[in-house]
Structures are given as structure tokens and as C-alpha cells.
Amino acid sequence: MAPPSLSFLTQNELYQIHSTTIEILEKTGVKVYSEDALKLLSDAGATVDSKIKLAKIPENLIDEVVKKSPKCTALYGRDSKHDVVFGDGRSCVMTDSTGIKTMEIDTGNVRPSTKRDLADASRLADGLENIQVFSTMVDALDYPEQIMRLEEFEAMLCNTGKNICHGAKGRNEAANLVRMASVVAGSSEELRKRPMFHLMQTPVSPLVHDKDNTDGLLEAAKYGIPLALMNMPQGGMTSPMTMAGTIALSNAEVLSGMLIARLANPDVPLIYGSCATVAEVRIKDYTLVCGLIESGLIASANAQLAHYYNYPSEVGLTFGSILDDWVSPLRIITAIMIGNAKADILFGVGLVNKSTTLSFEQLVVDNDLAGAVLRETKGIEVNDETLALDIISKVKPEGNYMSQEHTIRHLETELYIPRIFDKVEPRDIHLKAKERAKQILATHKPEPLDEEVKRKLRTIIQDAERKWAVEN
Image (cartoon, rainbow, N blue to C red):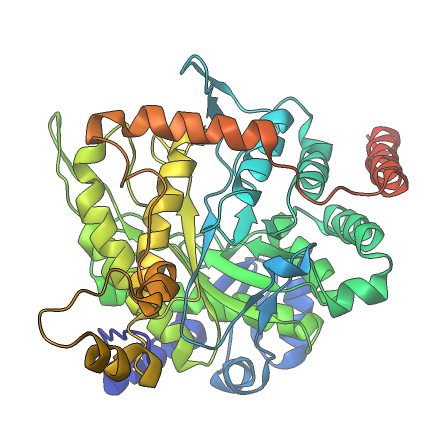
């Protein structure tokens, strides 16, 4: 069975984008605010102006990234039943990340997000069958910035067995995340074999690698933690208005970030990521519903470009919101486009209000929609069993297939049966989504961590907090 395949760029166009990317990196360059990264680039042969933090990168260094860097082949869960393996042309779904608000499930009130919200979202996603990877959906704003991401990591480790996508600012924070994951894995050696999290590091468009994210990337790379370079340029604002220009600039940011990671550790597994979009267009007080299809085209092209380099891809999507469902049909079309472009990770479900606000109901709705997209990208299986010639011969003209064991056997494998949309009228979707979210939160229990492991996690966080207090 060959999954559906959709290509928007020819091989010649992919080569043109690659060639333009090389010219951007060689002639325009990228700003790199990490002294360690600048030194690595300079030592490798890049032209570095340390005063203005500009690195111009020759083609031979990018060739190393394209031809020799290890590609991430799998994302491992704390629970092995949630492992995700790349390479068969199918997609998996990852939640959205770094919202700052939560919509309370009982009242609908919106307030700043907390660690408890993230823990609940982790547990809910762990119980949703069509979400395979959990990203840090909201910030734990009830903790200070200095330990916030460590507190978030603890909440996720305790509440999901799926692979976790997180971020790190600076070397110390990245090292502490690795220590925490090593405690859960049993040792640093076991973590290297089965890293239960991957780091999403984000270049700043246009063409900037900031200090904190880059230093975090360098530290995580030392330990072999899989890294997804995920930038977020907006066409017309932080990248060219033209889609091809945005893709070329985005490619320069991602490949240069991958190069920095590879220079820190030639064996670090890498994922090609992009969440490029086009800017929202406003004319006076009227917002044009545009850019949705174009964002899907860009994401699909980025997935194709990743595979041109033989990397797994992590690209952004959203299905729309139960709060503004009038745009959802366009968003679903873009999701199917991206899936058919064979993106490996579809990133961006569960947040509303322009990806700022966690909605438990939205996460349940998106799980249903994700299931439909994943089913569509699976395609049609053709073999002797599915062609059913013997059953057709048995039933004969004017017969009925309802009572056939073949029908019963294939009912759930052939048909995608959504949990929400097949049971209710459209006006009841929000209510049914709320009911399912509350039911999962009340009953679902991920594989628990050992109490001694939990104690060690708290110790790492407390030590980090004390160290920061002493230094400041």
C-alpha cells in the first residue's frame, strides 16, 4: 500500500531553492549571538565577524549537513507503546506549544496558564488516540522564569508516556532537562538509547540564532538529544511576501541551525522543522481570511524540502477553533495537503485564540480531526484479503455483506470512526468534546513514575533554583 503523495515542487524547483539558500548563507549570512556557536562556525571555516555576530557559511559546510548528518529515525516514548518510527510515509500528530492562557473547562473563563494546566493537558493528550507526541502546550506561569521549563518538564514526565517536545534556554537549563530525563530513563546511557524527549529550538526570523536557544541547542546536542529546528517566519513581515522567498529564507535558518548542532556533536539526530506562515492581512477594521491555503502550501513544500535532504519533517498546522469554526474547512484542507506531502510530524493542535490559549475541548475536537487526516494519508490497502474476491463469489448477485465475518473483521480497520463528529449534531460538538475531555481527565492514568524518581526530579529542580539564587 502506497500512502497518498502530493508534491508542489519539482526536483528542479527544489534545487533552485537549495541554490538560493546557499547564496543567502554565503553572501548575506546569519546573525549568531552565541559565542560558543560563533567559534564552532569560525573553526569550521565560516567567515565570522565577531563584532556584529555575523557568520557567512560556505557551501561545503552545508553539504556536510545535507549529506552526512544523522537523521532522526524515531521518537521514543517513556512508554514504548507510544514510540513513533519515521520512514514509512505516514504522519503523526503533535500538540501545539507555549500558550500563555487556559480556558477553564467548567466555566469557560480564560486566565494565565499554570503547571497544573500543563499536567492536565499532558494527561488528556496521553489518553487521546490520534495524538502521538506531546509538546509543551502552555507555560507554567505560576513559577519564575528561571525554573519554569524544569517545572513544566516534571509535569509532562509525570503525566504522559508519549514523546515530549520541549525547549531550553541556555546550557544550564538544557543540562538539567537531560539530568531529569536520565533519572526517568534509569541512566544517561539508557537515555541515549531511547531519548524520551526532543528539543525544539527556534531560529528568529529573519536569519538570527539568538544566544539562549542556541546555547541550549549546543548543550543538548552533546548528549545526543534529538533536535528539531523549528522556525516561524511570516511572509510579508519577517520573510518575503512570496512563498518561494519565504521557503528559501526559512531553509537558510534551519540548515544553519542544523550545522551548529552538528558541529557540537556530529552524531546528534536532527529533524527539519518549519512553521512558516503568511502574515494576517487587515484592511481598516476588516480581517481578510487569507493565507490559510498559502500556509498549507508552504508547510507542504517544507515537508518536501526536508525529504529532499532525507530528513524527517516537523511542520505546523492547525484545524481551526470551535470558537471560530467558520475558518475550519480551509484549515482542514491545509492539514490534508500537509499530510499528503508526507510530513512526518504535524505540529499544532489544541490551542485557540491564535495559539495562545489551551482549550481541553479543542484538543478533543482536534484529536477527531487528526484521526481523519491520518486515515486519509494511510491510503487504500490492496491485497488478496482486501480485494475480497472469495467473499464476492460467496455472496453472489443480490446477496448481502452485512453478516459476513469479513465485514466484521475489517469494519474498524477500513473505516475511521470519530468519537465526537459521528454522534452529535454540529451544535452539540462543544458539549460532547467537554464531556469526553472531563471523562478522560477523571479516569485516564498514564504509567506512573516511581516515587524515588519523582523525588530525584524535585531535587534537580530545587538545586537549580538554589544555584540561580546564589548566582543572582
